[in-house]
Length: 312
Image (tube, helix red, strand yellow):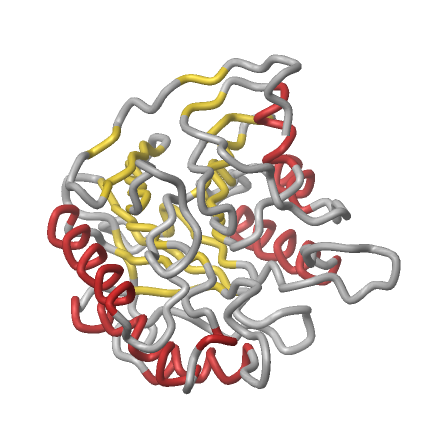
């Protein structure tokens, strides 16, 4: 069910980003993940929930489709609109993106769309956030960043394909034309970080932690450049690297990791699970913070200045 999103009367719109749940079969660690999500939603009362991939660890699930239903049930029961993009672990083995998109569309509250069949991936779509007068005040892009490289000689993870870049540019252009030629403020969500996440850590000022190397694709297909050139996109949010949670500005776009949410996967001692919270402010930029498992709200993460010893 596709719901219309709109700013609150106070001019804010709040998103909770959950990432890398790696849900399996409802084991105790999954129940800890569920309890964490419920606490965060109670504390933040968001307008939208976004899962940025690896909702399930599909190869470890007895019934991946049921596991996906169980993992997103917290969002459905909350009554808050929600959507999910796919990660590299969601669709391994026999389960496909088409299967899981079907599950998303079964559930109440979802704003997800399968996206155009003629472009790469499943779940590439854009959602508008309306102002009080029903004009589009902001937009949210959701992108399928794929799984693993299928190209001989190129190891590692998949990359955003040219058809997706073309689709993004068309959507951005359409929004701009409807807005008297002015780019519409926007955010973008995907699972695998863009190669520019490495660049911003190496050469920019960042806030937060980088405890593992940036696991971006080996190929850069130009999505970030297209977003810079088109204007409008203020921030990009990803998951995938469970013990990275930093944020940094590059060429006018803030690149941010979520905070890993799931207990059923690797982490780091004393690095708590949690969520990223993003608050759009009408006619302004946005602010963001982490909400940790112990309830702490992290508004001012530690500062990282570039140096040759910390390059990803």
